[in-house]
Length: 263
Image (tube, rainbow, N blue to C red):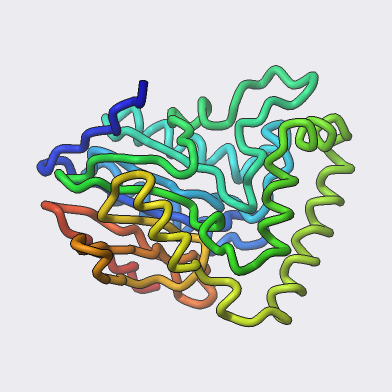
């Protein structure tokens, strides 16, 4: 039996964010993201974090002091009454995956959050909505999609997580460097979503609204699909050095970007 989607009433404000890319090397971005969440999340009924929360995640046993601070903030937000939801992205696909021999618990539990499947259906202020990280929709990038299939394989993940944390950190850094080098050589269109994949995903979910991140191309897209009007909202990535990153507030059925505080 198909489970009914999460129902979010029109009088419940919702916050969305993705692609925070938190890391100890990007302290200003961490401070910015945590400040904005602390400032605005308590006025929301729900906070959705749609993947790539961290620049790199090699297992829940690798959570450092920066990640612990982030978890502590989210726990405070959750205890104040805001429901916190998080989704894996392409950089933190090992989030909440059990690590052999590690009994510290899933990271989402330390955040007072619920881990979502990708994609995830909700009824957002009365509109059938699909939430996603967005990487699965970039189907023109065949090399990445092959990698995505590999790294989401449970057997492959367990093989990686059986290695020591030090080994995984080295592997992770190498993978990030290779990925960034590949992006510089890739045509821009390959890094964006495929319209056919978007419509297929929305068809499957019966959704008229899609909210995602990943592409670092924030925007609002509207189009007609048969008899249905559709909307796609792309969340921004976060980088304090480039003055990028803000929460998106969904209020009374409409998106309202929250402006960043001047620094």
